[in-house]
Image 1 (tube, rainbow, N blue to C red):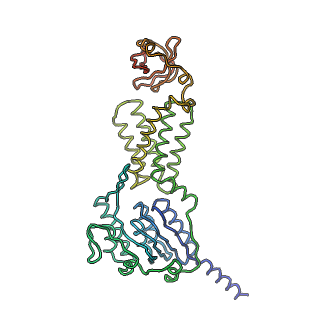
Image 2: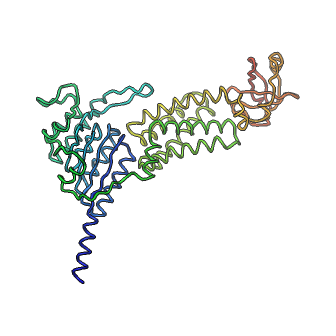
Length: 424
């Protein structure tokens, strides 16, 4: 009986000693870093034979790559990188593994950091300070794993020359055969199974896949999607401000901003501070635009807080996200003020009297110059006013006038009637 129990426990121990395969595919980003951290924690908790990172990536965010690299280096579980293609950030992650195996036709390297110019999508090498910092990280990781540090540095810095291997002016990229020859990789293998056998890992494998949380976070933190959410969020709040009481624009705006921060939160990028910074910035910009028109300290400070919020959330991609959001916001504002007052879609968002009222002929409007009337709606700065028995769409010069206030027409330009509050 004792022998049977021992055998069952032994079998149970062997069953648990499986190898976890963690795919690192596509762009390296914050949610992927979270997924890798979760996978390593599970492997350590369950006593895995090892963790295999199957790498096929063009690169991605440096901060996310460093998170993954540091976690791999700190792991107590044996690690193996099986490379299909490991460019840029993927090369750093690969170097952090205890063993590296190259599949046929694979490459590793080309890790020169770049900056993306918004709109035209141009890419340019980062400044020397960034290159130096990343080069130092590659060297440190290579030294930690006993790999040639000068080869690792040459992957990052095109100014680093390795005699007989690199050409000055180009970051180093190695083929599978060359990576093994230079001892960057341990072997070239035909398949994942062959890599497991050569590395001494259990052949019983379980492939881990990102859960719904990680997939949602990767979608929401895509720079284009995040920029759209930010632009729609601000547009919704602006539209609600000009058409108070409809609530639909506010709901859409707040939902978009909520999704914007949800992606960052799920990816481990956003915090309460980033949310506070964004809304504080929006309030300051609104104060500058609508309370003290001009462009002074509140507006500059508000823009700075908004920029800081985006930077803390998106790091290297903050410029790209912010630029796309500004473009989307500008287009949205143009379309909103150009077409919204005229279209059928606008009817739920503006007062029916303003939509349904037939504009008086031009000569009749000119006769209103100097007329005194009453604001039928809040003028923020546009709205509707009553002059005798006539309702007219009016606008102020930027000031806000509450409903019921006495106003005077100070200017008529075609269909545009400009009014001012009558004091006293």
